[in-house]
Amino acid sequence: MAPERPATARITQRICGAIKSQIASGRFGPGARLPSTRALAAEWGVSRTTVTAAYEQLIAEGYLEARQGARTQVARGLGLAPAPPAQAGLPASPDRLSAYGQRLTAFNLPSASDAGRMVADFRYGDLAAADFPMLAWRKAVGAALLRRQGRFRYGDPRGSAELRTALQSYLWRARGLRCDLDQIIVVNGSQQGLDLCARLLLDPGDRVVMEDPGYALARQVFLAAGAEVVPVTVDRDGMRTESLPAAQLAYATPSHQFPLGGVLSAGRRRELLAWAQSSRAYVIEDDYDSEYRFDIAPIPPLQALDNAGRVIYLGTVSKTLSPTLRLGYLVVPPVLSEDFAKAKRLTDRHSASLEQEALAELIESGAYERHVRRVRRRNSERRAALLTALSITLGEAVTVVGADAGLHVVVWLNRVPRTQERGLIAWADAVGLGVYPITPLYASAAAAVRPDAAGLVMGYASLDERTIDQGVRTLRKVLDAFAAEDGAGRVLLCPRSR
Image 1 (cartoon, rainbow, N blue to C red):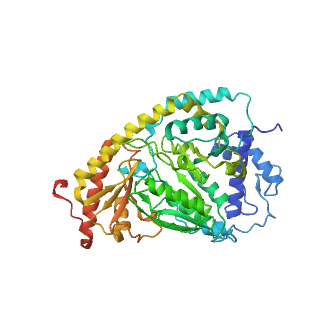
Image 2: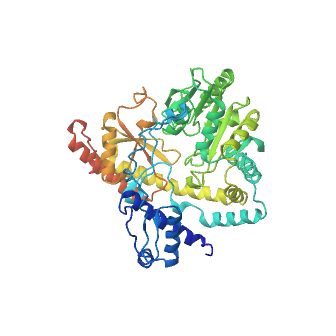
Image 3: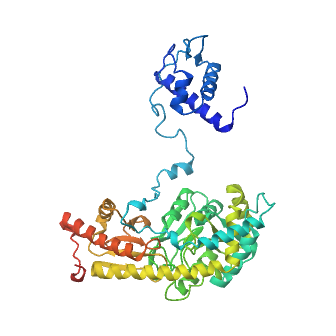
């Protein structure tokens, strides 16, 4: 018999698997006759040759037997006991996890939303598909493919030389940041950058100073590494740095504090750098959305003030291009460059080369900065639409903070107690409104400077103005219904919102 083609072989294996399953379940017992090859071929929509090949395979494996002039049947000596129900014998928990794995089991990690069924989804981090520079990206990918002809091999774990060169120039132009090429490490999004920092700089029991509230996935990376996260209160001027405790690492968002939106003052920047030098600690500066300042020029990075090599700068294109690209970058002190390159190599060899070179082409051609200017204007319009809708529809029932920059605002619901935040989120979800609580971003829900009110982190970069307005109107209906159900937490909307 001639060898089967790959597609035919896969169908043959599927037929074999289906028959084995029916035998194991007891549907076909020992001695039971199987359908003729003609009947089974018609049922599967394949040729008789394919079914014959499946029967011959099962005969060779001892599942079936054939006699001259009789239909193929299940082997009478097979003696298979019925298979137990699927999953019945599987353990409920792993037999063993490492200490790292055991720490992970305690985390409640966010899941992707089903935005298609929602009235409006104010999830922070999502971007509008229409904002992606499709034509420019397609052109950049084409140019990268032409450059790669004959170059199909593993690359530098630091990232492609083309992208690191483009980033070096861009960071100087856009952020005033000076660095050598070897200091730039291209990573699969800022999350991998944080993970590499934790692997290289923390041992179990080490301490990490972190803003409170702050980025939850950063906190969980450090906790997974076995570190102790020490929360530091945040106010309108960012992290309070006047009396930082001893630690091996600090994590901060000095140019736009996440989520409350403050800018770390000049005095506190100097205090943080002095603390890092005296403590021999490193500071991770997460500059996650510096491109989006709407009223003033971008704030210079902390790294530009660092003369002692204590700052690790973390950037990403997830907020400017797309989170699906998984492209970010670290700028590390020279003394750490080789260690980070080794850690990156062991993690995944290097980030995807084609996407790196396409991004390099986009930056070098000027298309990236033109795109950033365009989406900054577009998101300024979305921000204005959200602020107007919140003011008109909810008025004094809410307090909005962090609106000067970025792609989200924090909305305090002045007349909904903090204890009712989770219930309100459930009400909103039930009517197809995606709003997200601020409480998980606090290491301690009872932080001293936090208002005694429910809070929402509302992103707007994926929405158009009409959807934003509709979403805020739906939020008001949720607040009305929630208040009517629970009189103790009555939400009194101001007259102009009715």
